[in-house]
Image (cartoon, rainbow, N blue to C red; front, side, top):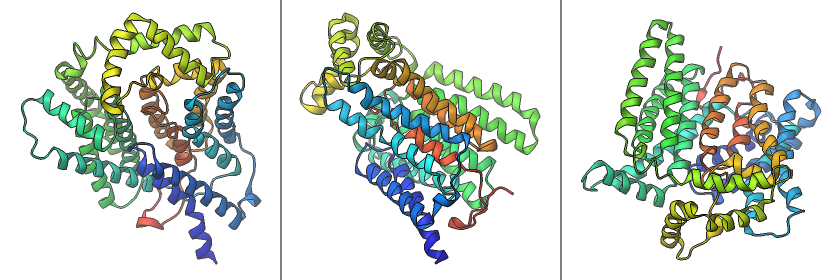
Length: 421
């Protein structure tokens, strides 16, 4: 009977790990089924193992209240919207993790999810992506870095996903690998394997065209190296290390083509944000609603000359290439905070910010608090330049809270990993 209880207890963990494995790839069945299996497994475990008997209220559950309130803003605001379109139903689905993890968090998670297992899953996905790209690029003639990088971009976009999705995933994986190397007392061979994977991830981020992913890396890398020197008692090397990484980052920014004209100075985002901000200024309190906001955003954008020059013309080319028809309605503000404010008003924006800030202060995660903060920093860096549901999956926030929400357990089961002594 104990064996059955233990197997049932791991059902939600299996589902969530499947979803995590699928996160760098286009949103589809594997992510949905992983989340569904995890939720069904959670309910099965909750009933079979009588989890309700140990339920008690903690201040940390306010985080899950914030998740539920944020999700509820979507349909509540739409009740007062004069129109509905496909975007509303799409957002209800892609934002569903806030509802699912909100309910599970209030009911109470079990203690089977381990950061080591999550790290291994993310490392496997990163290795798979690396193998796919190496295989696809093998034999491609090198005629210059810019041309080679463009070919790499086309292959990655076709076979994997955009650089925004992939780079967020890779930076998240580095945070988890950093935790294993610095905190976990798992087997040394596991740490060595993850260390080698981390080197490959760093190399992949550096050759990517994703500027935000690279800037995020330049913040994370010195912090984790400094933590490593501190752990080893070599504090005198921290300042030289910072200077070396700063010099290397400066040289990289100097030579990387995406940080120079025309890629940097012809960026469309300032013109896109200007249009979105005009909508926020008009309805800052209650917003426009999901459907109305997008339609109004497109209408104003098509009337703005700079928006037309820097965004619409390029978008028309990409849209025709990918879909055979221009679908203006999928144009978005490229800023998760600005779009949330635009759609759900200041209430939705504040709840969105609470979903990010509250976990860091309220969840009982001890020293792991800094690793959750690092993961949420990676998310926020991309959220300032991308819209949730486009190239930034909303599931990242609740799933990160779920992973880090428990203290370390004394469990030597899978992979014979031991917890910190």
